[in-house]
Image (cartoon, rainbow, N blue to C red; front, side, top):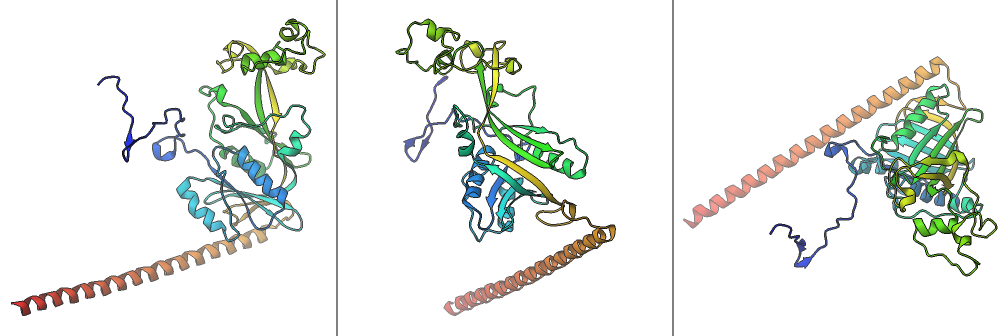
Length: 374
């Protein structure tokens, strides 16, 4: 009948259709743009802080990363490459540690390039929130969409700077400012290059939009519908007027003028977040915080020709000798692959001939048995 909704049935039981789940992003197989995905792993024995750093970096890169990936000591690079194509993974972030320090390899799969960084410094979320007056935690809605990527000062000269910029840009899906929904932009990932120290600083923020001209208690009532406590107030004006609560524990300084914006779209939170309303934009750091130094850029996946090296300067002859060595290695690998394929084909042909002979003997035996029965 028209307008009748029938619940789907599976194995004799009704199964609810999950209509509230947001459809997945378009992928290359569906004719849409390919969504970049990543693996964040650790190789070998690393300190406990690096283990926590791997988990928090996965959280910062959600939802397009494997948040519950379990590494094993026996996993090799080929293991990650073999499953990357099936899962649509485009980038690999691999942490390792030696006696000299902690290192990060950022590779584009499956053919490279690979950027090797030395982790000069890092801070975890717990250390950052310990310095904040009112720290906020990320919820499920904040992690449902990728963060807004902001690159700063990557216009310095140098091919390695352009490679870094392109690699960071390709780690996140493209954003169209004409069609973006502002309510889905909840986080910001800032990656800044310092030309003086040649360090790359990475910061992860939570984006908070709050109405202007309201006290903190009134904002909680209007935006989050949280009923306040009025026991410590002498009059309702202490709750309504922000200047009356200037010396209370629930007061906050007014955000500076340069953070005030006029909303171009409606956002959840009542009339104070409608289109055209004035709100203040705040960034609260969530962590982790990373300070990276680029050491090497390789042409392939964790190998190949060295395009840039911070600690080594090679002459033209040395570069040419390295390229010839890499080319010879590729030729040897291709020859070994061809020999292996030929051996596999010969073995399959031999097995096929053996199976055909066995089937022929079986048919002949069955025919002889039929003649004897006659």
